[in-house]
Length: 384
Image (cartoon, rainbow, N blue to C red; front, top):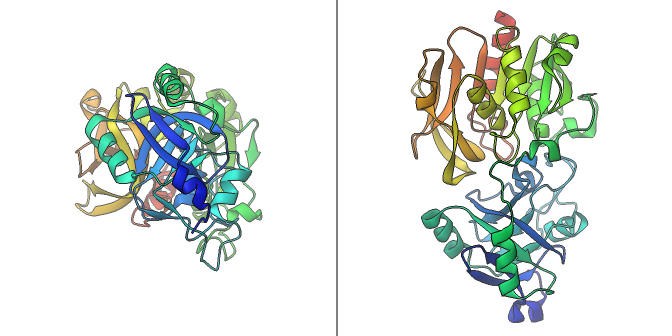
């Protein structure tokens, strides 16, 4: 337990929502304040991968599982070099009791200047978000603001709609994924010598996760990572065998430059997209995207593969989806569907070597049901 009993009793810190709701708690992270869009994640674990996923930039993550912190943090399981989530909300923060832990979650949050609150009724907060939809919010962990001012700040924040967050998280320059770097190994993956690469791909970084790069490398693909704004002709000059479009945060609509580049590449080279990359492919093929009421965030979303009839339990993090009806032009086949709300989770171009999926098959955090999709990408490249 985090034994700051006085703070726990006084609950001077709080989360202020744009609808005027204020939830009081106590600080278990950096003593700073932050704006963000509150979402809930239904994973029982995996908070390290969630917090370090660039796709969560701009969001304040509420964990629905009540006991968080037990496994601590380690250097192997991160999905990027730092915490990207704007904040964390939990019911109970625990000290780590795991042999792999190198630092507590509390200390990691403080090192990354990320606020977090415990003592919050996360069940009530989750119910509010499910009933009313995602809300803008202000975390006050400094104790230097009154609740009325915090609510007004939440209301005045521009939010994530029509905001280009990919430019905030993308790499600054082109680099090759180093197969001998520490980041190429994680629990149960990369301990053995990787397969010698027989294809070269270019990966657009809209907020790419390290385990996606690990999974691609596992398939024997040499990877060059390029910034989000890299022009299509610059990509082709690198002579790749295929192009990968990564996950990323916020709204795909403002990324018109990415859509133009994808349109210029379709028909010239095999392509795969995940999450934001999937949405951008949908836009490039003439489709539309729209915002979900409270998004898909968790490790337990059922998705049916319409080609096999199999159901996969998947890891997801997105607030926007591609409207399947907007792609009824004969070019696209829907390959996967979410069984909770029937939204599109995957597509395949009928005439070009292009596939994409809305969910995260890299299993970070798990489950591993959908990792076969990286093999499908390799087969797509081989057949081209």
